[in-house]
Image 1: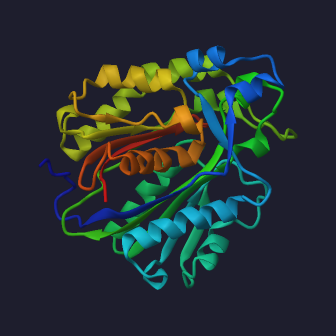
Image 2 (image 1 turned 45 degrees about the horizontal axis):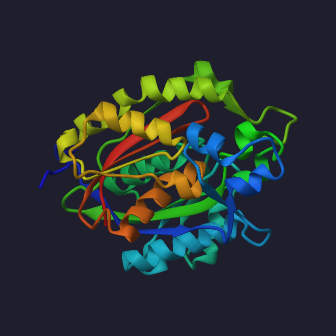
Length: 322
């Protein structure tokens, strides 16, 4: 079994449990075709989505984050008072103050943790995972809860087929704790701020715009190097990877990255976008949870994850599944 490498003398951290929440309402392509100029073939051929989940009024960011976080806590075997750091990643927060991280922690019964929100677009969960990993390895935190949660339907123009057919809602979470053998590799992250306006909610607007072709070209030409860097930092190769779970932005992007990296024939590839759409900061933990629930991935597998999106930001890591 391949071992993730860290700097000499650095303690390790590992994912102890995963959790997910998917909104009740399923929205098919045929349903969207009734209200906008689109159809199932057009959507699936361009982004690979067959259906997505849209949150109802009672499925708020807080409610979904609490549901996913509670499942991750239960899977970890930790009590709430053993968690002392909560990081909530989201790009669809509607109020700038206060953040919802403290509220989510309170609802979960986590007493007085460090708690804050993080917005790195669709890379948010992987950014938060990197921060939590470093906090534990430095000794500043014992155990951390990381949540990616989105209600992108709140910030999507439902008459704009270039975005309305893509974005969706949901939450995914992970509990991270210290480990003798590291289960989270060093993060390979960065940003290309020259393209900051490719995905944005401009000042004075309430809905998102996206230069889809520009983002597609960037993701398919620039981010393979980030994935290779993440594997190199962790001391593994593509042949060691059991699971590949990149951000679920576009099935064509997933397939392009998979082909370029040359994984083994038994590597499980996340294609959660087909059923879940693009859930931004929630997509990586949702995809990992789906793979484990289906049996395609199992405890102890080595996974390569990648988040990327607005900013333009990106972050990748090699992790050991709980």
